[in-house]
Length: 276
Image 1 (cartoon, rainbow, N blue to C red):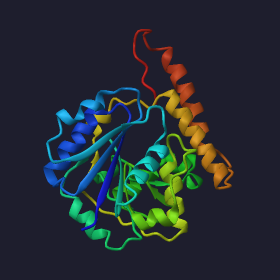
Image 2 (cartoon, rainbow, N blue to C red):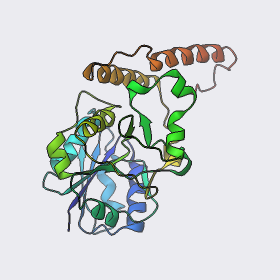
Image 3 (cartoon, rainbow, N blue to C red):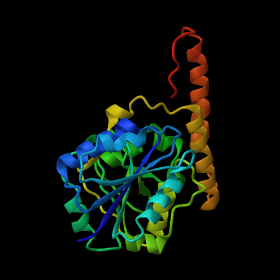
Image 4 (cartoon, one colour):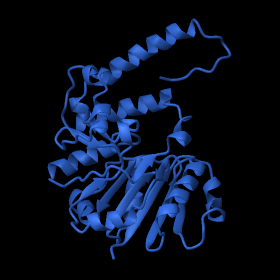
């Protein structure tokens, strides 16, 4: 039986991790599955996790404060170096059916690099266009939502958003580790671009895993995250020698800044500003 190592990457997401385990155990036996929880914030609440997770679950918590997502992915891969299958998951993922047997069955072919995540209707993005194929036109039309709604996937133009990534050991050996220059955002974009160029297969399933929208709804996309995304995109463009004719992200940020400025003129001083 193939061994599976699941790395859960958290940033002060204690409740999300509890929901992850609760939903996982509802549908799957934890026997033969090893878990590593990586906490990237300075909050140490995760040390009490063992009080709330049922016995028989094999897990370890490591604290890696102020480290990036790509670093955490690599930490998990190295930790489970002798396992057959690596799973890299966000904390805010929940399970809606059995998944372990599906993973083992689909990884009889070890060259697979895949994700099984799809929320019907595209409410949570699974597929997205590579940055070099994006424009204001594609963003205004919400092309990514259409891709998800109709499960249109073409590995030349589309990558899979990294909320729940699954890789066979052979895929990691062939493609190497994640680029740790990506602190937050674009690390999975860069890795799937590598998979594409090495002809690794990607398979799509239509259920099994979704984002836990209710627990994530309060997580604002604030100005610091916006700057990190802009920085990651700039590095991605440089790495892949792509010069955008019009950087849609910078333009959209300026438009949103003007919008917020105008909105602030009509909002009471004590009202909380919601970042767009």
